[in-house]
Length: 268
Picture 1 (cartoon, rainbow, N blue to C red):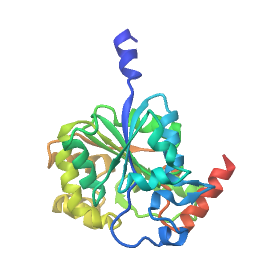
Picture 2: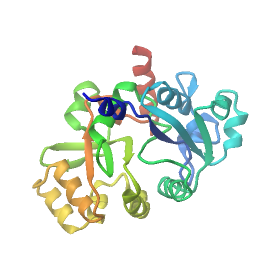
Picture 3: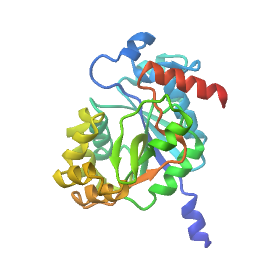
Picture 4: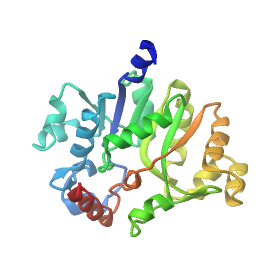
C-alpha cells in the first residue's frame, strides 16, 4: 500500500449525532421523566452518552457535531454537561425533524462532508460496527446500514422490527447513514417528505416510484439493486451496507428495546 493510500485509509471522518426529539409526545420520554429522548437513562447513563463516547473513542471519527433542540438543557444535566465542554464535540441546535436538521447543517456549512450520521438511540453502537459501515459506504454518495432478518433473529429471536422485503431477504434499517457529498442533498430533502412513514416499508418504496414498489413486491430485486434503482432518480450512487452485527438494528424505540439493550450491555 502506498503512503497516499495509507493516509487516505486513516483519514478522520466527521460524525453527526442526532439527539433531538421528534414532534409529539414520546411515551418513553414521559415514562423516564426527562425532556428529551436522548436523556433517557439506559444502564445508568443517558443514551446519548453511550453513543457519543463510542464515536469519540474511534480512531477514524472526528469531530462530532451533536444536534439537539436545546443545548442548554444538555449542559444543565450533570450526566451530559461534558458534551458541551469536550474539544471533539460541537453542540448545535436542531430543527423540527431529522431531515430538515441535516439540511440546515449542510446548507449552513456546519458540517464537513463526507460524514457519518447516527442517532442517540443507537446505544449498542460499537467500534466494529463503525468499521463495517465505513468500509461498505466508502465511495458512495449516500449509504444506509441494514441488517438482514436471519442475522438478527438468529441472535435475538424476540426482537421485533420493520422489514423491507427483497429477493435476497428481509431487511431492517440500522441507524448508521453516510452522506458522501453535496449530491446527497436532494435525497435528504426528498426523505423529509416521507419521514413520517419511515415505519411503513411499502410507503417508503412507493415514494421512490411504482417500479421499485412493484419489483420489490414481486421479489425481483435484491436490496442492492433496489437501492441502485432508487439512487438513479437523484443521479446519486446509493448503496446499502449489510451489517454482520445483529445489534446494529436494535435501537431504543420501545420499552422492550430498552430491556434488551440493557441485557446486551450487561453481557459485554
